[in-house]
Amino acid sequence: MARRIQPNPGIVSFLFLILAALHLNAQVTLTQADMPAVNDTFRISTAVDISGQDPSLTGAAYTWDYSGLSALSQTLDTFLPMSTVPALYQLFFNNPLDPNKANLARKMPMLNLIPGFEIGDVYEFYRNNAQSFSFLGYAGELSGIPLAVKYDQPDVWYRFPLNFGAHDSSRSVFSLSLPGLGSFYSDRKRWNTVDGWGQLSTPFGTFQVLRQRSEVEEYDSLFLDTLGSGFGIQRLFTEYKWLAQGYGLPVLQVTAEGPLVTVTYLDSALAQGTPVTYQALDPWGLRVSVDQESGQLLLRMRSPLDGPAECGLYDLGGRRLMQVPLHLVQGENAQSLRPDSPLAPGVYLLRLSLGNRSIMEKVLVP
Image 1 (cartoon, rainbow, N blue to C red):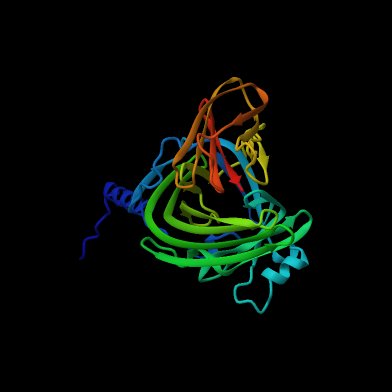
Image 2 (cartoon, one colour):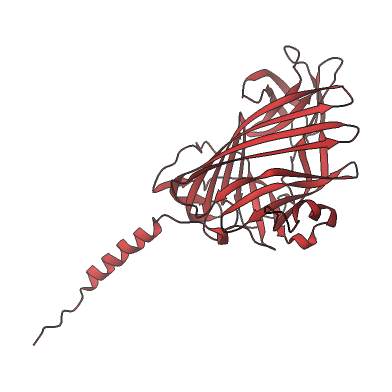
């Protein structure tokens, strides 16, 4: 007669813990189903800063701890069906004969696509299918004139299935004529690499994630009819994205362009009194213009408090061109700054720091 062996409860519990640990540290795979869908709504917080973290650190079975991030403002974004988009924009982005037609749209109030020109009532367009999730372009109004800007080829953010070690690239170009103003051209090259997987902690929770690093090289050219001249801008920036199954957007994203670092993450509703908008807004209302005769920079802002501040000017490569101490008063401020040497036409970054707070603003020198 065979003897029946009773399982040892201690061994069973130990094996269960091992299996649970292996599951928690397993690599995830992302597909089309993990991307935004029609009518999905996301709360996205913008952090004050990166809290001393190095976003380049990564690896297999890696642990990232960004739980100390502190939100400065929050956006509420919704992805819309193409049927809700104005008919004129659908001609560009929802043409049934176009193999790269959009199937998602997102509404934004403003876009600083072209330095010095604000485009309002903006829509962004995306395509999500079994092969990839891609950004297709923008549409909006400039001084009441509707504009549509569509890349010749999609800017591919993710290719599916997305797994650790995957890498790909894409190139996207568009040109835009602005009647009576000039023309704008943009050539974007993107290299994506999934360079890590593991566990990520943010103020929103703890997630099993893939980490994708994207190196983006972009050349923008602007010609102004009013000046009869133009200039080119070479941009280099890195996007770090931590992606979890079923969350639609990155649970954390860090974008670094020279000294400018932007940190956003998925979040729950913030405490009452925290600015919640449809676009992350500069809480200081910083605005910078250039006096073409004197070459001075004219700054206007609302300071949250009295105190000493520092103002730095950088080129897009991160080289500091000027550092000036300021004293701000609580409320409205106006300052005039003279760079150490005349600025060549182009785009620069101005960084204003007050206490442990800092903000950046792009400056166009025509």
